[in-house]
Image (tube, rainbow, N blue to C red; front, side):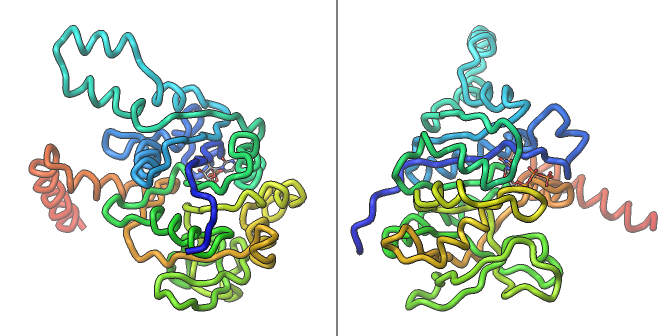
Length: 303
Ligand code: UTP
């Protein structure tokens, strides 16, 4: 294995406007929407911690208070639960605080994912770092981030997570041009394009919300002009890095992910995610599943 610096920090951008989820996201960040009873962003921090990243920087925007409060001690609530002897809920309330050391930085204006990442420059410094999108969940049973950190250790540069999507969905993602390596689940990314029009995508391999990024990205982002949608695109900066040598902070590799992923930033997938998570909860499934079956039968008959 080559001698590249270890990855110890995670950056979680959570400053987007969440317009696809309005009006719920008018006063609440979409990353705080609950998946059954836990905000999506807590799963993301759990994933970072499970991969050994105990220094987490959140990039927040307007309405940041609820995110900060969720990962902070809630004295009044804890006292009330302690007084009631409700140890179970008390530990649920304390859990997010103990996951990792949390830091916060404000993205003044939502100028795009690339700009949100640039806001992490001072905290991250000259180390490679992981970036996890706060509304994108990876099933804990299909670990991806650990593998990506391993791949960074082997090849250096930056690493993206790629998932095969149907033709009609390529225009929703950044899409990679890839070439094989000697490892089955790893490819070299030679080019990237953000949300290509249908029929013009270089492949069906879409970039999903997990990255391990070389710190060279900051200098590139500073020079990256607003791209698609007037936003500073992380994809554009990664594209520049894909064309550089390792010595210049470049090369991009992709880990091909075939596990379970939940995009909670859009309404349909959010609903699907909540149902799937509820179906696996031992405290809810015994009542929820028979109800769901009955509901669907009734629905089918009514049609
Ligand atoms: P999205 O592409 O999902 O954008 O961002 P969005 O603006 O939040 O949502 P819609 O499209 O309006 O519904 C992907 C991730 O990048 C963060 C978001 O919070 C989300 O986790 N992001 C995006 C920022 O932190 N800042 C930005 O300026 C844009």
